[in-house]
Length: 92
Image (cartoon, rainbow, N blue to C red):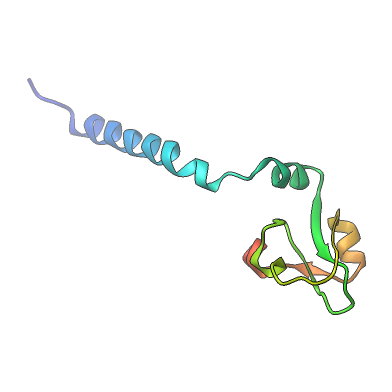
């Protein structure tokens, strides 16, 4: 009995993909607050005259040392405040 190697390789590739999805996807998921913020187009800003960025993630390390109030606003509001996307959150 001869096994079609293309089918065998495809099946192994599919198994590998499913495995990766099952074990890696949970670590890449957003928490409920983050996903709701993104769905509502909300971001986080530090209410300071020296702050220049907005963050998609409240737990961003760029917010760890903030001494002023952190406020949730829309992206549009953040841009009107002269803010740009955080390089840590947005990877730009």
